[in-house]
Length: 117
Image (tube, rainbow, N blue to C red; front, side, top):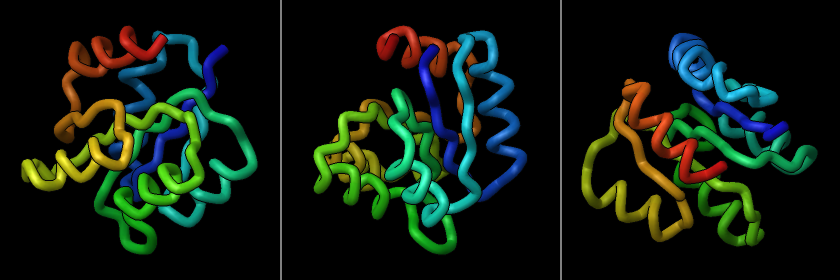
């Protein structure tokens, strides 16, 4: 069973993503902020991370930067309300597998998951 981590400071977003991916039979873990996400990432090997960018302490770009520096093989799907091309490009440069707009459409999320599994 694949392990996934949903990182978002919004409980509503975490619940929505959990609901959208629940049919995929993943073991789902959640982090409420960037600091908690890094702690979980360093203690557990995840297959996929669903990552918000805009968080109060450590943001998604900083998390991607850490994963990139550590050569962490986990696939990261960024789900963000930030739709600037420069932001998308930065995420791709830092190794993000995909970038989805928030709120993600179920079919878009399913397509990305199919590519990952």
